[in-house]
Image (cartoon, rainbow, N blue to C red; front, side, top):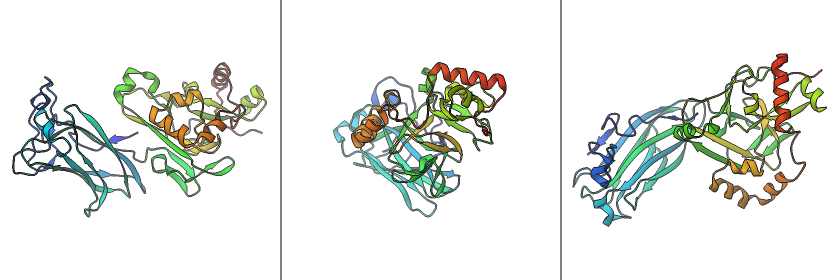
Length: 358
């Protein structure tokens, strides 16, 4: 689950948590935009003749590379609209030696807030600094900012089995070789959808399913695992064999809720869902637990953002056509009623989702 490392990124406490020069965090949004809002914001051009620099240090923990996402809202104040395209600021993420691990330039052009986003890959745990530096005419008529976030997935980020060992899902890249039950396969596409706490409150179907460590049986998953409601987990046990005449089936995570250690995580918090697509629908391993790769179908495409859906279907039409073909499932996916029946029998008999078949 992503965690925001920035302190007072909304400026509700003025300059608390922020260092730098020529900070201006005392005014409400209405003072710059004339919209009546009492929301507190900061301006990236405090006094004429002075260069505004805002910075804040934060600590990243974890093993190996750690992926994060930087977000910030920015707009031009009404008095700055004549400087559109010139006025703005730079964003830099610096390591402890001053090396740049991420940078971008923001030049807002309207007096309404837009959100700007940058992916950041931290090479290791350590102390890093976010630095925002004023750009444009130094006349005290600059860009305003709000909702500064540095979202990082710590070791709680889902680990996926790859040919090079377990990797946090957020560090995977297209071309990496992911382990499947049929051996290593090339990762063809990665989708990501960030869901805010507000979106989860308004639509409970966006809550993730929490599968606690060991809840599936056979010690799996090895750590707590969070997946979207319709993401399917492999079920393998004697009851599956009796019901379906085959050793394993795929069942949506939401159907497993109610079994010991498997719950719907309802407390509001931002969450990012990742989708991993291979050449074919496959069983992959998340926290060592067998689960499915992304299967392209009408229902799964509906869960993607429009941009992600367009990217997948444009870049990989053959993948989409193959995955949508009848009989392309890696193993049986029972209809909803049969999934519910299976889980009910597991509960009544006290049997785990995953167990040895003898």
